[in-house]
Image 1 (cartoon, one colour):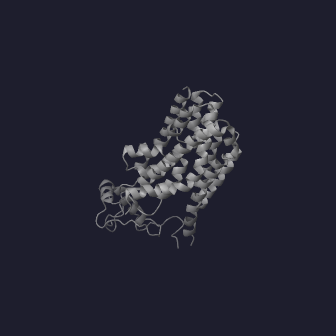
Image 2: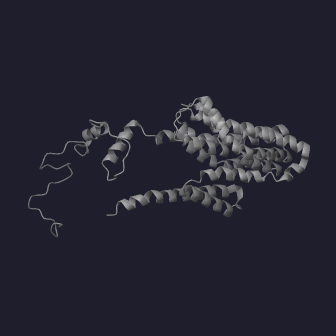
Image 3: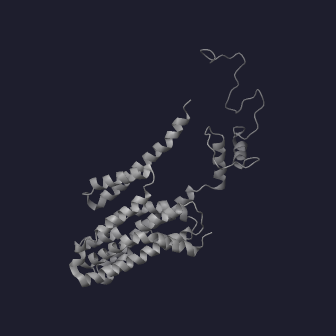
Length: 107
Length: 241
């Protein structure tokens, strides 16, 4: 009977190893939520990659994009274009009409 | 649409070719456990309490050498750490299941069961009952393992040492080769298998079966590197004028 505690301990350790990751919640974090899918589709549709992505952005205002728009202003790619003569985002400065970059304009 | 019943039996059927290698494996374990000094009932219960072939072999060997119980538990822990990789691989597929199902499938998750289950989970054919397939494969293996262990204990009592002289232990190596080869489908997996095999040979003499973990790390690293090279190559081609 001296073997039994070691065998039970070994069995429990084995079971705990097998169960550990399944119960850790890793799987939930690896799955895309519906909102994440929209963000992913949004990023891909505005990227330079030319292969089809297989996930389409729904028509109309994009929910996460609308939230971004409300939070940071017209930086969201789905926002209407800014009025002519105004900066696209508050971070950009409009160059004066007579501005010339050092070294001249690129051909 | 597949039913739970059809998935269950499909899983059990898929396990049959592997069971051919598991039977001699179990017979050898039963005989070795008795020879190591374990009473027949304890030797038999090891197969249901631990249910991990290679760890059971090492435990029996340690019992024969009168190693302390803590050493047995720690060694089994190290040898079975690879099951964490299986668990991580299966986890996304069983996330929707109840706790009871997760506990049951975790108990049945062995090398031989994983090799069959993961193929079904990666199968394109959609089914909401794939966990029944896993249960079928796992229970087929579990039942065969218990029966072959019992047979080994009985044969050891009848045939004595002659049983161990039949060379049945070669079945262990053959079984693991049969598990790995069907999965060698792309360069990353082949690189992982080659690297881990070479690392296992190089580190075979290390104590506490550390060679096993080193081989696992070498295989995973090689697989990740080769896969990344394969993914990045098309991107480079796209940026060319």
